Image 1 (cartoon, rainbow, N blue to C red):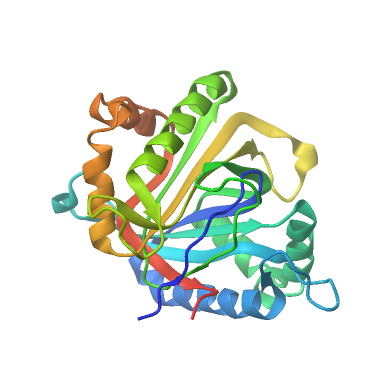
Image 2: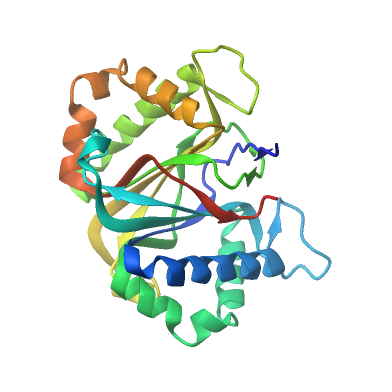
Length: 280
């Protein structure tokens, strides 16, 4: 079995994140769209910090689209689904110049050029950030390492829109979360402690919520987007994560759930899996 390559995505890496909420009857159409996007990314991008010969390809740390049913209540799967799928895009780049190269390449991709992607974003989009957010906390020290996250890997994703006057409070919360993750999780497919969850990647992205990501001159909404991206080796690792989270004080005290209810735009806890990406 291929597990891909686990990742230590460096702090400060610029990101692209999007979450779409798609009705079930549009699943086949949107699946085909993202499969075509995978082919576009594979043809026009490279993984790692080394340029291609022409120095034109954007350099990725990681890329995938996850997919899963939108749950009525992430804490109680017995309540079922909303009748929608969540598709989450996670991309991180070596440098800001690589995000620019990505946007230049996207301008030549037919579904972007003909307006299909923008139409879908307007219809299904819950959140989007294109280069305006960066990796804020994570498992990497120093330059980190690029990744190839396996298809089918179970994920946890959340996006919160937080008022600017709550930034210091929220920064402290996520820095504490990083310490919790470092103490209770491991990176890679080999157990070092059978109680620890095995991660393929983990980070929190942070950046201003833009009024229009295509036109930065329109400014920000006055809120900051925090985006959690986590992928795991197996579903049992998500369970171990949730068991460990139950002992983390902000979760045990109800603080995290209170934040989710106040600031959450989307959330998926183990219900979505990597659907397309760069790994074979």
